[in-house]
Image (cartoon, rainbow, N blue to C red; front, top):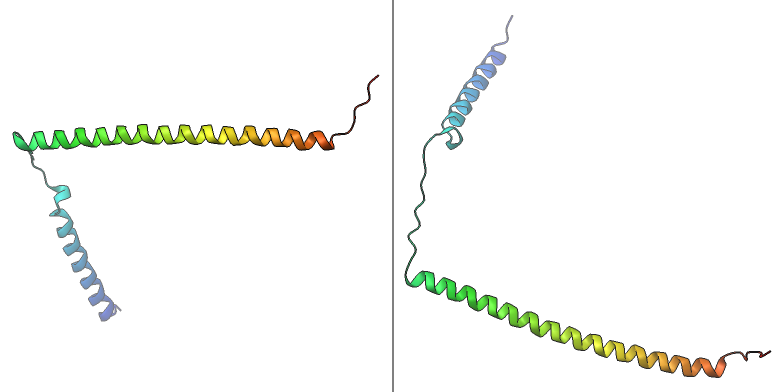
Length: 103
């Protein structure tokens, strides 16, 4: 009572599953071994890299000082504008302020 196409499909599926299983067993995730890394750096390359790093740090520091000076100047100018605005506001309010009764 078995269906021949069903049996063929099951056999083909079983074959595909076995093939996939054999591929995953051979993957590097299941491999064992030792790996070593040797870095042979020295001489001129190290000096060039260290100098480039030092130059980048110096430029970063100089830029930070420059930006801090700009922000400080901007803050001072903003404070001056606010103070001037307060003076104008007090002048305008003095003309429109209601008179106070003295006892």
